[in-house]
Amino acid sequence: MPHTQILKKDKPGVNILVVDDEESIRMLLSRFLSVNFNVHTADSAEEALLLLGKNMYELAIVDINMPGKSGKEMFKICHREYPGMNIILMTGMPELADAVDTVKEGAFYYLPKPIDLRFLHSLLNRAIEEKEKKSESDDIGRIRNLASEYKIIRSLGCGISGIVLLVEKDGKSYAMKALRWNGESDNTSEKLERFAREAEILMRVDNKHVVKIFEHNLNKIDENPYIIMEYVKGMSLTECLNKKMFNINQKISIIEQIAEGIECVHACGVLHRDIKPENIIIADDITVKITDFGVSHVSDSCLTMDDEILGSPSYMAPESFDETKKADVRADIFSIGVLSYEMLTGVMPFEGDGIYQVMEAIRKKNPVAPVKINPEIPLWMQDIMAKMLDKNPDGRYSSAGEIVKAIRFSRNEGDGNSPSITSRILRSRLFLKNIWR
Image 1 (tube, rainbow, N blue to C red):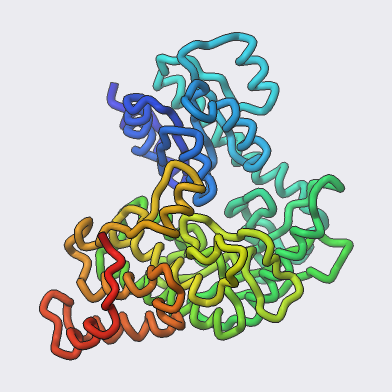
Image 2 (image 1 turned 90 degrees about the horizontal axis):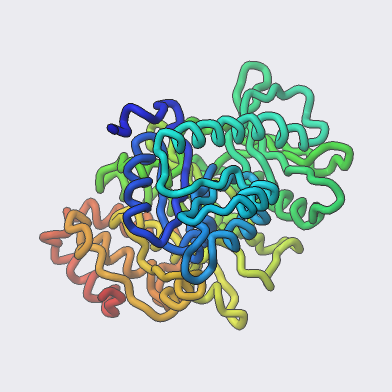
């Protein structure tokens, strides 16, 4: 049964997570689904929860019986922390009582093994269609008193705390980020503080590589808080990498643009604190737009939350996990280094079975030398990444602007395989410590 004839061709932007400790099941579903969807797989609930911290998924297919944290436990966590994601539970030992209970608790379906792929196809399309309707009706319906002058076109995406809408005014398109309103039980004041901080940051930053904010209504208590931003036609860097869209030179150019935008952000007294592919939009002309400053630290703001670990652990600097140390701009530089490594090699520099294993790897382990994974990477770019990923903040670049200068200088000097005398001297002075293995 050729699966290319089964799935619809109209859901290319949907992210699906498959969680099963059986490799054969993961491979089967991955091959079947990846024709039309962006598919990630995990062999445990712990690994899946780590992926959920890095990506937004429309749907997860989770095996109930797994070693360690069970699929049911994962379902309860996801149902609480990722309410916008549909979950299909699957099992080789179906029980009617379990099926009734899990569906009552919010699971989309209880799927028995062996899996009927034709049935799964119809089930997925139904789940996705229902989620789209929910995004356009239920989520939008919970947004109170949106500005009447803006016409809502469609939903661009949603998360736990808010929804992003494509809106139109006077013939122009904008992105509206609105805070979801869930009633008195919601921790509204904390979310509003984070939301206000994002608006303040974007108003202070003026750079072609940072999304531009045009207006907000954060001071109007009778309306749902929102900000109006430029609408960027493009895809997230995550989607671009999944589709393998760029060559090595384009990827280095994207890294350079990210560093240029972050340099401007830092110049405004702001740490981004959550630099990752999901927060980078790539426009159709391969122009970078940095977004999502919801966990940022404004140096002169009373809204900072220094007691919390903010950001995505896989991209965070070692000092971010240490309560005795205060992160500065060099923490963002480390994050750019992690993102650069992921872009150029296709794998993460620091991995583990769970969040604490990842944290330990970031603190103590050296990543594999990038050129061992991808020989196309110029040696000079590997050196630049080495300086970004130094575990000691003092060993990193002191500003994102230095990354831009290093890339431009090295690119002009040559391809890195036969470096000039000047390049060799710089390498001998700047990269004495080898962080690779």
